[in-house]
Length: 157
Ligand SMILES: [Cu+2]
Image 1 (tube, rainbow, N blue to C red):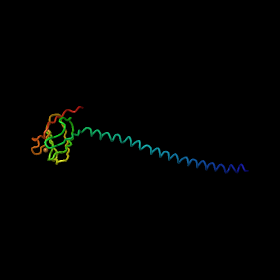
Image 2 (image 1 turned 90 degrees about the vertical axis):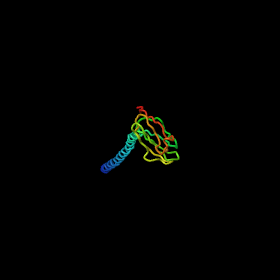
Image 3 (image 1 turned 120 degrees about the horizontal axis):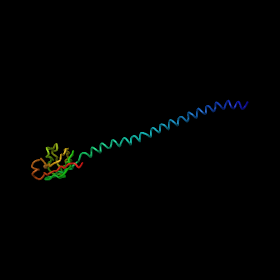
Image 4 (image 1 turned 30 degrees about the vertical axis):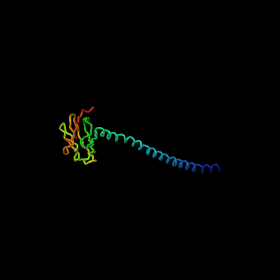
């Protein structure tokens, strides 16, 4: 009688333990899947950044930047430049009002306004190969030496 009684009690207890074990085992599996999904996004972010960086770098290198320093009686800038879209970054380091005009090959451009001493301005020019002249159009500054020849050469590539 004692054995039968023990078995009848033991079977339901085993079933309950088995159900508890399945429930407990089920929870860790869900948590593990959640952790796996969290690990994926950082990898995607790393890959996503690379394509975004390349276009910006390419567009920056296509446009040449040329520094131009204007002083009283002289223009300081390279006398030879490669053809292509060019940004002239001009600074007036003189004591008088100055501007920069570039003329040649059907192109004639100058800064939107004259630069006071210490001021800076930028001017974008799509340079074609050939001979140009750069000068200051203010007053008689061109005759006083603020003029120089500029040669634009074919791009290497
Ligand atoms: Cu000038």
